[in-house]
Amino acid sequence: FLLVSSWDTSVRLYDVPANSMRLKYQHTGAVLDCAFYDPTHAWSGGLDHQLKMHDLNTDQENLVGTHDAPIRCVEYCPEVNVMVTGSWDQTVKLWDPRTPCNAGTFSQPEKVYTLSVSGDRLIVGTAGRRVLVWDLRNMGYVQQRRESSLKYQTRCIRAFPNKQGYVLSSIEGRVAVEYLDPSPEVQKKKYAFKCHRLKENNIEQIYPVNAISFHNIHNTFATGGSDGFVNIWDPFNKKRLCQFHRYPTSIASLAFSNDGTTLAIASSY
Image (cartoon, helix red, strand yellow):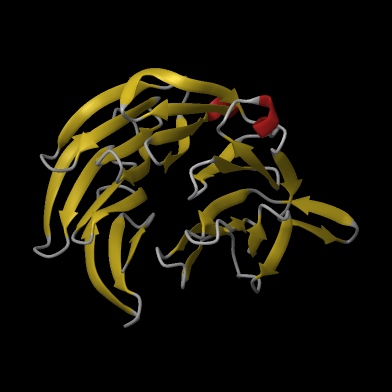
């Protein structure tokens, strides 16, 4: 199954093998992110500031809580069994999915643009090119405060499935591969590279890298850019494995299935 949130204020559930829509529910504003808690419960948030939980079997919805500004990110952390939301109100909130209710609110230095769960750790990318690493089992303090190694605004962060690091992309056609272990010998392995750039009439056009998704088994990852291309990368051998055909408009979102057999690609406007 594939869960899709949209600027048309809806969340849709698709049956991928059957290529059909199974269910649709609404918010009162554009829905910026969604996530499965389990196979029968979807969570979603967006411009209406509301966090909703929807039972996909009974079609019942539950308004779990709100932020003071639009909700940009919704993720589930199976290791700690919490839902995590990040908002432009400069907070991250944790939610107990069983009750469901708020399990804590944690201030961030700036608006939250992107976040990713890595085991029991949470990596948050905010405005001002800041990156914060939190321990979801002990949110009393920030485990690491970092600055993006890229010069321009952060677009997307996704954690490696092996939990050792994360990939960060910016609006300026660049991707950084970073490691969580602060020791100097591990930090020596980090690097960045240019991508999603096109030469047109001898002028290089540089596009934002909007989306990243990891392949759970191989630890390879896909990137999607405003150039309409999707690339697959091998971060260990530092090479591009393939490029898909160009989509008519920018790539807004990417998601590999858990078993890595399919890749969902959202082409936007």
